[in-house]
Image (cartoon, rainbow over all chains, first blue to last red):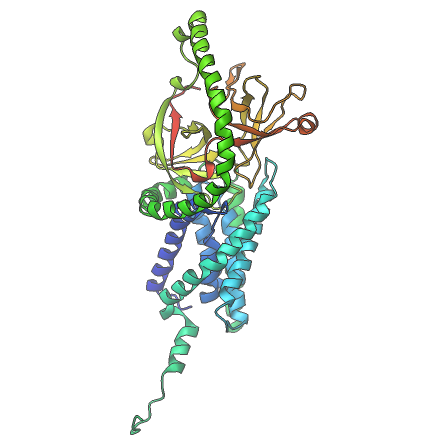
Length: 186
Length: 282
């Protein structure tokens, strides 16, 4: 990803908007007693579009903002989200995405990984109460919701960040028909 | 060139990971740092605007969810209504008897112990934590409205939690379903005492722990805050705040683990308007 000041501003707005939407809307809306978590989806999408550095920095920043707003111990969410963002970016750097199903499936897996990460960080910090088995259901449903939310989020972000995407600009160049001087259009 | 890029990438990743661990180490156990307070103060107006703007969309999704849930609850509620009617008749008798007894012992002349010692301040929930591990909500009222750390928070149905941190125009509330929450409580009417602890991951289930295993508790009994006071120390919560209703009270679990399960009265998952009980001197 070619990060110009304009693209940086867009990324910052995306991060802030995602956090505000998560805290004010997605966390407060439940389907089957579980709310969706779009933050791993946003981080993974940025990683898939921009590479490992973009994914890691976006994950760290979004996690930091969430912890600040919730007045939770700083660093917990950052650590987990930078991890999934970096892994998504690595995937993008090593493999080509040939199918439209790949990003949703990766987001689904990464959300499950992120939820496990949150659980591990919390266990590391100490859990002072018994843990219900419903936590597993919560993780599974969150990753299923992530699958569906990836469609608008990933493709929306791709559209928003198109000028900065290396692969996209190459595609545009490839699609353009070669110009031949003196040729007549048929 | 490529190696240089890889090295730079790894260095940034290492820096971010170390940064996360340093932040965790430095801020763990602190209620609210200056960075968090500042960021929260800047973003709370934005959260309020987002909350208002997204309320119709939230209500729409909530309507679908509740419609599905209501189908299953309909028959159960019909049965509960029949038993509640009987209890209401008995309750009215008890109320009139209680009023007479209060006059007799002149409790009304003494300063009340419960809610009237507090000044309730109404607030709206503008944010909620995305994971089940941190069960917290953000309110649009803060220290500027008289809210202090550890103030009890209630909804129309019962106890919700306590204030964990405050800023000028916003505050964070640790819900009773958070793993750090512990509330001293008693079962009505027999007064069995215990500590309410959450069952992390299940907001519909609380555990009344450390109860006296020789005095049995039954399903359907109400649980309220006990509001103890001893040797200069006092509970954060006033006595008599409704918490929930006992759902699962097997004798085996009571005798073996000294605990029963209850369902909170407050709809923790769908909190919107709450009251913070402020102004209490500790």
